[in-house]
Image (tube, rainbow, N blue to C red; front, side, top):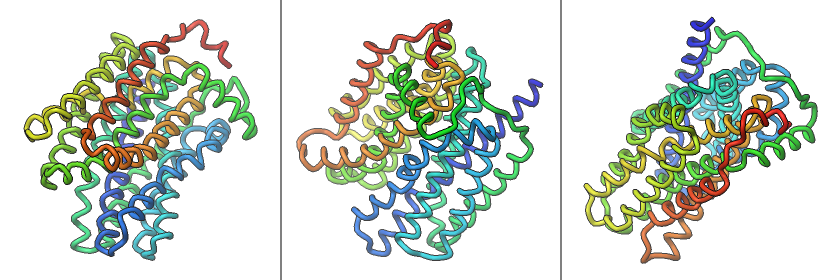
Length: 393
């Protein structure tokens, strides 16, 4: 039985890695193609929101099929939607057709992530939950980090990256059929949209603090990748230097995902979250004073990545600590919503900040956001005792 659970876990995190790979590839690839075609940067940025709009649109309708049909069908159909969408990109090059495909990938990826997250959090024992979710985050991060390496293939053939990524996703998708389907706890029926909204309301009431790290990570990741390059070029950094800084942050996040997850199992999710939020905020604050020294900036962003790179995965683990198992589907959906809202607002507020506060460092908006979440967790992050969890429903 334990061997079967291990095989299931590694298949699930491998699927997540392939999903991260496709997302990491699409962001720079489509941006490069549109830039070469002369499409404005504002429309280019608008196009990138399609993924997150898809996530937000489908969220209220995800819990019912998961409870009725189980984890496997939700993940299988989500993965199939991603594969087909990637395959269709080369067939018709159109701004709005590609926007629709991006929206469909957002829906498919959300189904895939929702199913895998909930499956892992539901069946992970408390003493291994942080480790397992950290491995989930690690595999996604590695996939997301490798994805942009496909972008240069556009010089060989514009369709080649889409074809290769759809092929990889298809191979990973076939492995899903080896899994035995399972179901979340069925203590409460969810038969309508109204039932889902009630569940969301209950999950928000008792677990809202745990959704803030997911929002913060979405805001941080999108503003850092979407707005910081603009700011970096305006303060005189070379394109290669901007890429180096973003890579330093990403590598820091990948390397320290697992150690922080294991530490959270030993010392408590809330304690580790407070530590990483405070340290990450201080790292970005330090970076705001060191913008003239590239090596110092690289070190600051690497240290920041070491800690806040785990914010999303630790937030999911913290949510699973606060809510009873029968609430985990709703909790995982709301983590995805919080991340998407953060991802949508990050580039906008980052751009506004750069435009209107030209004498203030861009890193300050990130450090302020992290400090605010830190203070909120300190003040309101009291963990609910296990014996009270069942009363939340």
